[in-house]
Length: 470
View (tube, rainbow, N blue to C red):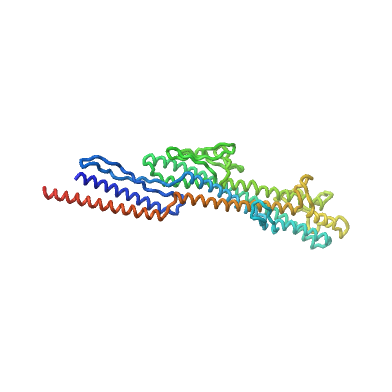
């Protein structure tokens, strides 16, 4: 009878083991579309044999849960997330800057970095219209309508300069806000990783191998963090991750150690810091936003400032060659794109076409000729080349930057897809495999259940016989 009791116990452990295995399969199936989930597997462990009066007897089965997770593929996914997010952040800000110009800019080649064609429809058209109005005034120096057109086109030009500069400043402000928000999100993710470290270490200490769901959550947090800021991760013997980031002066700064956020992130003056150490992120959306804002967008603003300064200086020099007080066309103090303005005393009635008698067009002609004049910074000018050529190169530059960003996003996204597919084929959930395993475990469960019932019936029959005999 003791043998039957031992067999009954063995059947019971088998029932429990198959039930736990079915639960693992159910969990896999329910997470088939969860990108942070790594396939779990039921690992059956033999509890061994013991010697009894009836001979060696099995102690039954237990089940532990293992995971198909590759640290190498996880690291590759984090790297690609960081690269794609960085290029995408640059792309968005650069596109916003290009839109601020109001120009139609098309690349003349599919190769990034090649010249772009600028079809003036924004600031460029306003510059052309301004000098064309002076050319028309030179042809009609006494025409009141021509003078009104000059003043009107000049007003449009100054408004357009200031509008473009304000929009570019807004793009930079948006980039800074994006980084500030991203830093706050990154700090929350660092805290999540630290908390999960503690939970994983605690669970594994009491029940080794049972923290797989927590590990999935931590990996998901690390990948979200990598999209913001590239990090390095090292797991210790207790299963806790140490997270570090590259410092600007070389070496690494520890962000998370075991269950503690060692150095929280801050952002100020275009620099991301961890504690007292400035960071030097090479990718991620934080770096992408900063790079675009302080690089191409700032260069664009600087070039427009130089262009506005050149127009103000050159036009005032041609319009008021003697430098008479109150005789300028543009306000002499507004020599930036954001500050350019007409001289307060200028009206269509006071506008002069020439310095001589009625019909003199010398001033209008001098201003109109500025459109074709070549300037040189070596000669003390603010720009090199003609006004229209300098502006076209400036607009083309931001167009090339956008085209490069677009290509980088496309190419890196393709690489990201390949890496994600590699990891998915290694650790993702396959419904076909899960259904096959589910049928296997259900069949084993049914067999164990029938064995348990048979032994139970036999024991009941023995007990009944003993009772009636007694």
